[in-house]
Length: 204
Image (cartoon, rainbow, N blue to C red; front, side, top):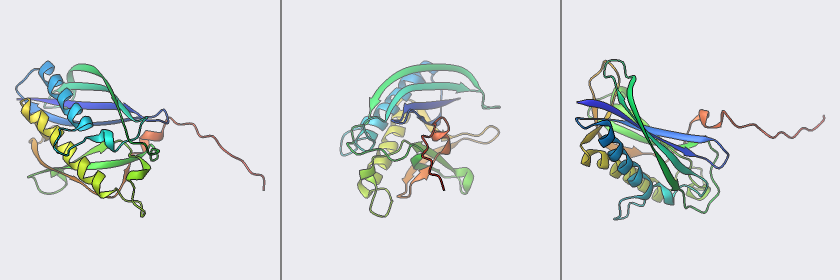
């Protein structure tokens, strides 16, 4: 079994970028994993039907996904030994203004392993402000759709012959068994490290 990493890179209206990714294991080649990862991203973004509409209905216009990069990893070190890439043209469709660029919804990846080592995180891009409740939490409909979309996307990796896992060098792989999405927003500070502020000064 080989270990792979799927990384999705996208744009934010501010000019910043967002990234997310997941590990998988399988016997296929890097090119076959690129195909499976492409199906993963398509389902994550566009849904799979049956009420799973994907991220596109919850993230605003101006937020998109632009690149898919996959790696084959050395199991002992976790370092990449091979790389492949595909361009993406995916854009959000929500009409609301975007939440600040560092705001993220987290999909918690659960395994059968108890404790912190059995849990992972998949950071999603910021949603539109209309997906935020009056008390600043994730709207229940968006919360349910995001959880279903991530679960369906991980299923695409499985269908392609690659098992979604939590991976750490030196530890056994932990297959992902379920996805949780909470209603409290999280943050990724690095999503604003390239922004230059426009300041207003007032003399005292």
